[in-house]
Length: 106
Length: 106
Image 1 (cartoon, rainbow over the protein chains, first blue to last red):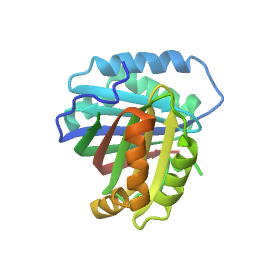
Image 2: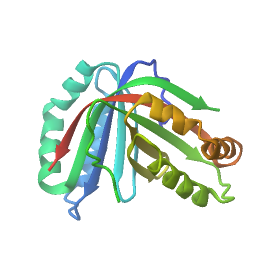
Image 3: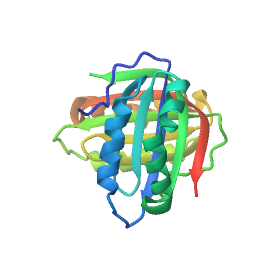
């Protein structure tokens, strides 16, 4: 499901995760898929969009800052984050944002 | 320049533009490149990241809501927006967000 149009009730929250990958694979795609599945099961999760070319961008949407905190601290996610730093990402930036308004077409 | 790590002073503002393309080309890449060049020349522009797979995601960063408004209303940008609706995009969503905090690695 491309969720580029989740039916957001603004205000809500977005986490913009931008990254540059290393050459290492070591189960990256598998873990990324599992994290997506896990995120979708979290309370307060609203949707996610993801694309990668030179830079990878994943934007996930959440009902509250608390939902983001719980997701960030999920033990399986923590383990993946540590591997990400060690193996998969040359660099990344995580930005927590408050979605103020939304315009859709059509 | 992949600007996935612009040196943002938070709070600042992000515009998350997610889209699904039509099959029409008609100068899309040329206009997209020109819009990027134009955005970079605007006052209050801080950086941009872009990637497209199934969904395209472009996130641009701005110093203020006013800078975003001026960019949205730029005549050349307006013309491109109209062509986007008519020719290039099956659907899109624009979300204006306030960036509250940022974490970087390394």
